[in-house]
Image 1 (cartoon, one colour):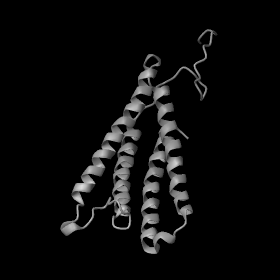
Image 2 (tube, one colour; image 1 turned 135 degrees about the horizontal axis):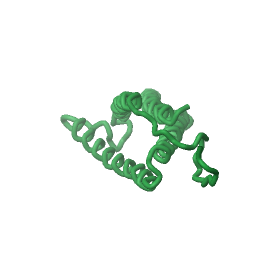
Image 3 (cartoon, one colour; image 1 turned 180 degrees about the horizontal axis):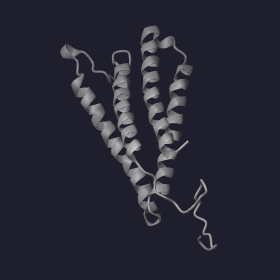
Image 4 (cartoon, one colour; image 1 turned 60 degrees about the horizontal axis):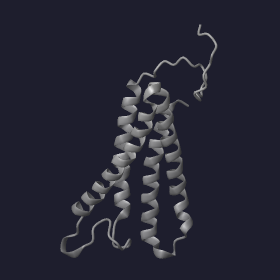
Amino acid sequence: ITLLQRIGVGLALSVATMVVSAAVEQRRRKIGSSMSCFWLVPQQLLAGLSEAFGAIGQIEFYYRQFPENMRSVAGALYFLGFAMASYASGLMVMVVHRATRGRGGQPDWLAQDLDEGRVDLFYLVTAAIATVNLVYFVICARWYRFKKSDDAGAGDVGLDDDSPKK
């Protein structure tokens, strides 16, 4: 599995996580508070797998495709992406609060009381955004050409080879 495929699997699993989360929330709304906490296991498992594929694939991609003297920049870009995502998620929550503010005293989707809100719809909106992100990634990944490397091994661990180059 290539680096870009790993990242793509992570993105696809993030879409699946949101869809499963929405389904579990809809079920919780139907049956009430008697639902077992083990219903959260599938979405948490998918979220963990998504993060493992996406994050590890992305870090490995940065370190293999960036020039050697820019590898520290690669790590910084990864964490910069996390910072930007945090701000974007805060903005998204604010927009959802304002856009879904109830008329006549109705609560919005992200109400303090889960039984009054519609978190399932929020999960579906997040899944739709993640789907658009996945499609955009696939388009960009098809255009991407990997950097040619001198090392033939799959894992570049940074060991110096003193043998003459052929």
